[in-house]
Length: 619
Image (cartoon, rainbow, N blue to C red; front, side, top):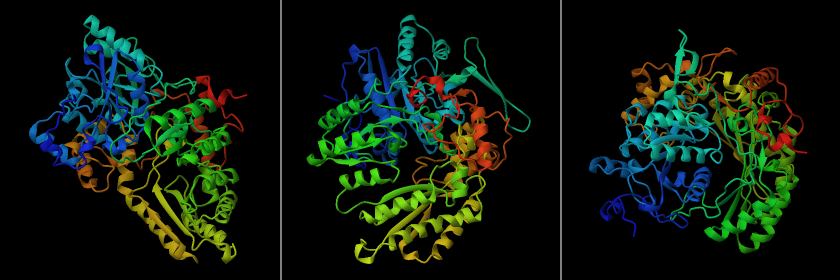
């Protein structure tokens, strides 16, 4: 019988106690006497968000297939339990065994977005593990970071013992085996980390020294010990079909964000949008085989009881066997009442045909992501989407019975001008006009077009990493201009516009583009009470500003400052396969408004072919 770390008395006083009791369907139980290594996998956000993350499900399954390893899970306690744990000195615990996280060999933290950085410190502090890596002793777990944010780990580097750069299915077992050897031989923590740095894809921050120019930019980053690589090479799964994938994902007791079976059909994207970090760091594009996906669909639906299956990828329409897969899922599971979800589709005849088959008579809204309001700016960002395609797709959808459309845009993109901004409202109006071009008796009521805009953040390892950001006021001025333009449109009652928070965008920019000097600011913000920064009700920009001021960090240095093409970035020590020369060419093409063909139309020599797989080697 599992002994709970929290008493019934505490569980009855907190919101959603099922977040903390474990024992979910398909969760793994092992005899601790029969395992050599204990690994606690953490997602530093509330349970409902973390349980929806596919990466943790994959690694949880992969680790637990090894008899000598026991992988458990932990998530950020919500604010009510956080308070109780601090008051009563209850150490943070893993869900499966309810044992304290501090007793594990490894704590692996998946870092999906920058706004969870203070939650990482919460997890460490509540686990009673020293927040700064330099303060940890032989009795503390090895703290590992992984996920998209590790492509610039520097703002949080000093909180981690090591980072795993790339896809987790490749060298994690090499790291586990090395740890077992070190444990058996009585090897010290420092010696283990030095040896771990020799595994391709493993970055140990304490073994590198960063120096700076007088202007504050990075001069160089060099290893401090022999045998530590100058560059850390991203890890990539060459054959997705052979890679580990969970047949029995854990099923929560409470509703979570993604409450469904998820089939990852491919990784990477052929499109090459210049603002998109995922499209660059996950190159090359690699798909799973149709037969493997059919098999996973059967097994995962049977083992979970879920009533929905969703296809996961950056651009589902580019999966070569999408038609065969979707028709199979519809014919095989549609009649059983299983809903088929197809995100990330381009709106074309095939997509509309499929959606009409999988959606109820009352059709949900369609989603378009033009990203920019004018064709000029769409060419700058290499979106590969023309106004004609957007309008034709919308018209066909309207004829098929849809009458709700969601449009996603970005404001503050490089070279953006007033006409580009107003173009967001103009495009929404043109889509409405397509709807009203249909005879009245054939329409499905009034059309509703909702446009939303986020503010652009120039992420590492994108052609736009040289771009500048704007101030919060400039972002808001642009949002208000677009909003005013919406109010001027003929069909304004059918149109609506909303925008994201500019202050959150600025903070995201600092954390995404920062160097090691930002770590002290993250710590100060956390100590002043910042937590769950991605949740609007808890985000406190004032406290962050105070933290930056107290630690001498200039926000403008990381956001609005222009960058020279030859500047050394904090993240340049990572080799993602895609070369910096390619990024420079794409930055130049953006300024010149030149479109680069997608990977299947023409190879642009980005460098990702070094990984010997995927789209680079298709016949």
